[in-house]
Amino acid sequence: MDDHPIGIQADELYARQLDTGFAGEIRNLLHDPETGLAGKGPEDALSGIAEAMPMLGELKDRYLAQAIGPRQMSILEPLIDSRFQFARGTT
Image 1 (cartoon, one colour):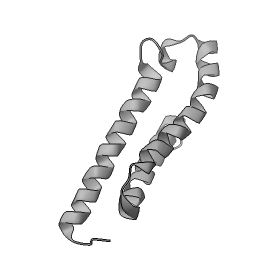
Image 2 (tube, helix red, strand yellow; image 1 turned 90 degrees about the vertical axis):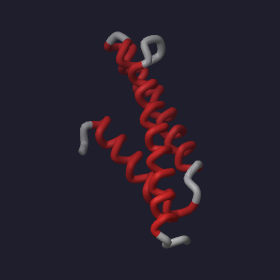
Image 3 (tube, helix red, strand yellow; image 1 turned 60 degrees about the vertical axis):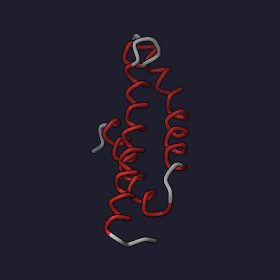
Image 4 (tube, helix red, strand yellow; image 1 turned 135 degrees about the vertical axis):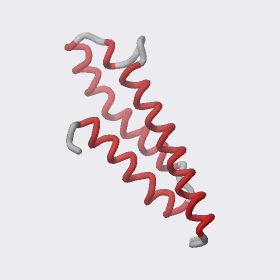
């Protein structure tokens, strides 16, 4: 593992770019005018949440797989998990 400050900074930057991409996909899942949960009626939104949970897990796995090395993974995973906690209202 490269402990040089530039290596650390590069890992942080890349992990934050992945987190930004992840957040954008979550926003689309929730707020897209045609397919998002927020645009649906109450009953459809509730059933959509059940359908979205496996998709969220797959999305998390896909973004974590893009992390290069354990340091990027250790930066990215808590960022993604905190987004899930915030979405659930358990911050």
